[in-house]
Image 1 (cartoon, rainbow, N blue to C red):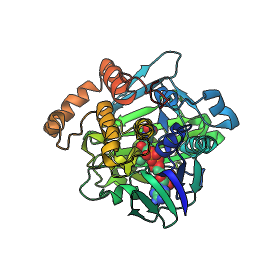
Image 2 (cartoon, rainbow, N blue to C red):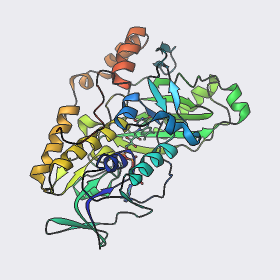
Image 3 (cartoon, rainbow, N blue to C red):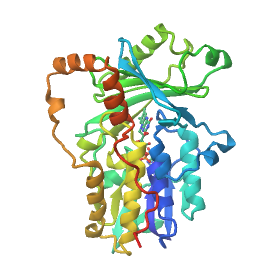
Length: 384
Ligand SMILES: Cc1cc2nc3c(=O)[nH]c(=O)nc-3n(C[C@H](O)[C@H](O)[C@H](O)COP(=O)(O)OP(=O)(O)OC[C@H]3O[C@@H](n4cnc5c(N)ncnc54)[C@H](O)[C@@H]3O)c2cc1C
């Protein structure tokens, strides 16, 4: 039996950030992931500078070894089929494009260098309570188990989550591929200006995002109905307008996630807590999930440090309170805007999305860049 203070199930951005944030905490930490790294993850790979700051990532170090770090200086935004509005910012990048294949491996490797034991290529099979600790897979003992296994996290399921049932998911499909030299030369998409297309029914949006010579195309919707048809229509539209190569691969990869306000998942339990997609934390309008995953990990690290070895539900409750202070209270019922008649919403949105002021101040600054929210401190040690 191997023994740890903290066992983190899932080595994506949430899990690796928590392991890294617990460095020097006098806690033994292990990260269990069913995959070997590097591994792919369905994602557009768009992160704001706030995320890099919260992770204390040295951008020059990150770029070393040829990792993709595409600086973004603006956006084109519009309703699918209508003219787009272009917003440009200044010299400083307002976002970065990363490849999850590289980003996740970089963060997990760093967590390992900081002392966490990396148990990759090992799936979580089950957990049982024995006294005041958990036994996982019949061979790992932990005083606290953190579910960081993404939307289908097995720890979240053990805590009562029911993915696919009674949850309002966002379903998304995406493809990322390296363009050939001819495709790259012919591609009109500016790597510094990703393009966003809201669907006419406002149930979601599609994107084209060029990162160097990689092209990332995708579409996500709040209703899972006929997603593949919506994606196929989007791709046809982009091809007809010459925005993407005719030979764009057809096999898109799908995944799901939950938006924070409606996610019915618990955050804490006796000796267990959930972070990242396992807890259902994505921002409502953009679906961005990496920043909430990183922030939840930082808030969890602060809480675990304060627990002084007592990981009872009462002590872990501080994490839930911190999450509410940061992300607000969850609202299981639809909000006022969501209850407006669809026709009215669409008519108003069509007008607003033609407005450069709205595109910049609301869609980009507020919904996608979250520039109103200062980053959390990367240092999770209690104040002296
Ligand atoms: C199409 C699409 C596009 C997106 N684009 C963006 C974007 O541009 N920017 C952004 O911020 N967010 C984006 N998101 C959301 C983002 O991908 C997630 O919010 C983010 O990956 C959450 O990180 P995480 O660490 O919680 O989970 P994950 O990254 O999903 O990591 C979970 C880990 O748990 C492991 N795991 C799962 N089950 C088990 C098991 N049984 N045993 C052991 N290990 C297990 C997995 O192998 C995985 O490594 C997008 C999502 C989708 C679907």
